[in-house]
Image 1 (cartoon, helix red, strand yellow):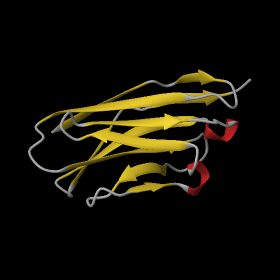
Image 2 (cartoon, rainbow, N blue to C red):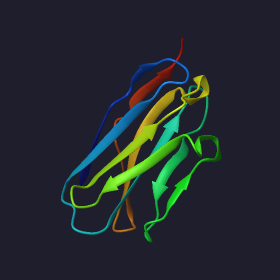
Image 3 (cartoon, rainbow, N blue to C red):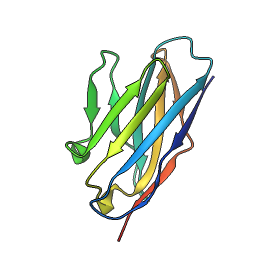
Image 4 (cartoon, one colour):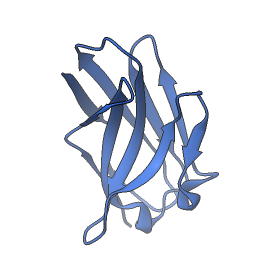
Length: 116
């Protein structure tokens, strides 16, 4: 079992920045691919950014050039630096981990609100 805990959400004005962090703990015995998803009210959960098994990154088109994902594989952490935030980025952001390319785990989510 893998537990994920996010931190760093909050309220920010349009154009501002936030940094989300996620730490994984538990019985991590195989590869752990981590990333970020988000879900806005009335919408489906969508991928924001993640790492592939080859180490490449993938971003949603809507965040390319503004968000940057990073990780520390030794510490099983992943971060999301969000710049030039827009009101449409408002959502609950979820940390996701794929353990051993089989088991999916989700954090409880952290609220990001972009508003003036």
